[in-house]
Image 1: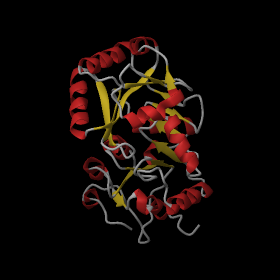
Image 2 (image 1 turned 60 degrees about the horizontal axis):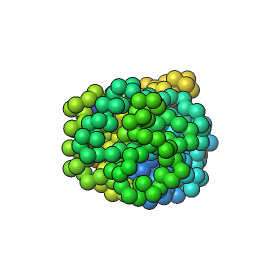
Image 3 (image 1 turned 90 degrees about the vertical axis):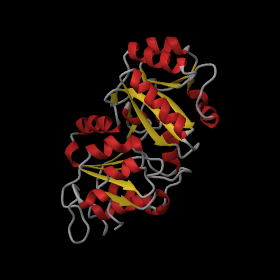
Length: 297
């Protein structure tokens, strides 16, 4: 196994047998996508693909938890030969693979959504407004502030709607910006959360570089989506193994029974981890098979 994180030398919940198998029963594996399940180019290591097949054969459910939208996450899954139910937009909505309906959805109130847009507009920022719609789930202003490459990828997902009308009349799930300069994104997150009661999720943007920020309703996180999924499926949320790599995975790793991080994760994610696995590019995710005692299958 890989070297343990600092947490293992103190308050770790990770108890293993001499063979390195977790002694507690695990009901659900939850995984971040970019930089965790697959690398920055959306490519999954063969060892990771094999590990997912082993978990499937063992009837171990796996749930994705990502900052991506479904329209962004699902094509990359298909390219890698997988189809996972997903907690999307850092927990704001959850859907079965390619489903049009959701198993959970946490939208802003119109008043708070309007306030967030007003604050961002006052700062000269025009965000991507993520709405609860099965087809066209993005509303944009005239001069969007997100990365140009991200804009090009949105294509038919953009709904023709005035942003101010959207925040007052539609179910707004999140306000997002991708590929921003790190100090700018962190300052922006601090500025917005200081003025209005919302949560900010920050993650490394492995597609466009820089950072990805998502503003979502207060109390909403990947972990909130996981709890909703467990309730839907009759799983024990106290028996979740989770793995991630970024600041937006902190609530997930803290909430889970066992929290894992990849070696190139952020400092905040590493600090929450019970064990550190090799990177996505090295297929470190596959070590979950050994932890669950499924290595001989």
